[in-house]
Amino acid sequence: MIKAFVLTAMSAALANSALAENEFRHVVLFKFKPEATADKIEEIEKAFAELPSKIDTITGYEWGKSESVEGLNDGFTHCFLVTFKDKAGLETYLPHEAHKAFGAKLKPLLEKATVFDYTAKKD
Image 1 (cartoon, rainbow, N blue to C red):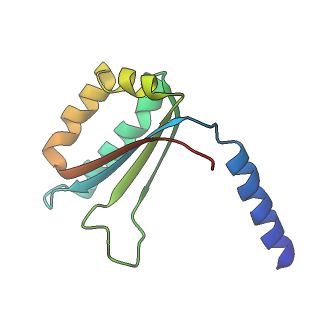
Image 2: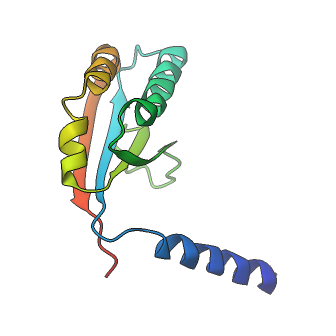
């Protein structure tokens, strides 16, 4: 049990040290319309996951569905975290044709989105 705890703590420390100071993060939360089917939402998940291969300023990407037991997600079900070397990377990403095409596919299914952009800090 202690061995598992130590390995977990070491993994977390190594992961944290690998984060580059001043990377730029783009956090996006989606709340889908009630009529958005599971198949259509899965298409959006896959389309978003394809963006890093189409836009070279993306240096990191991850996503997940809400698993909160607190019930404070206000209907937002999906979170996407996109990382760039710097803010200029985001400024290239936003008007990129692949991002625009993704937005056009997403828009009919989306009830609401929340976006939070920030520069990563370690301290």
